[in-house]
Amino acid sequence: MTETPNPNIIDADTLTGEMRPIRRAVLALGSNLGERMASLQGALNALADTPDVWITAVSPVYETDPVDSPPEAKTFLNAVVLIDTTLAASRLMDRALAIEDAFARERGEQRNAPRTLDVDLIVVGDRRSNEEFLRLPHPRAAERAFVLRPWLDVDPAAEVPDRGPVAGLLERTDQSGLKLRDDLVLEIQ
Image (cartoon, rainbow, N blue to C red; front, side, top):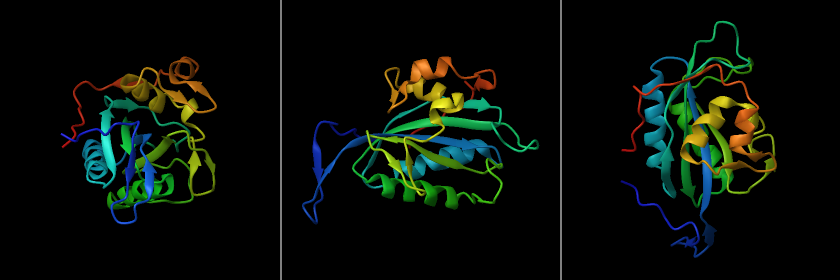
């Protein structure tokens, strides 16, 4: 099991001596093509193998109706992962994209198209970014029950910066398309 660092300390890079704060980050995983559960587990394993990333919690798995997707889209499996990390948000985003690529994620012009794997950065500490490559907090997370419900399961006090507590945001979303899958469990390896 991975040891969780104390979130009140600062990690020093052993080569440069640069001080790097440890931040809590939230990532949302989703898949609706291929071996959905294997893709989620693979993404979790890849995150666990990432230097300077410590997984602190993994949500239950939910089966969810596609949102704003093409009519032929199948149901998703979704989960949320909480991590502590000293990685910069941009490096964490690079890692998320590399994990998606490793699972043959195709990016076409169609928005919210079916995908083998989606790894979204939801929040990284209190960081805000409005760059094309990196938007933090995730611009639609506060409106997505498939992100909010699993996040609330692992962090009842969670908040989306500038938007409010996850519990309150979840109350305002349509949760009819969510189904808890007790038979599916992601495991930290």
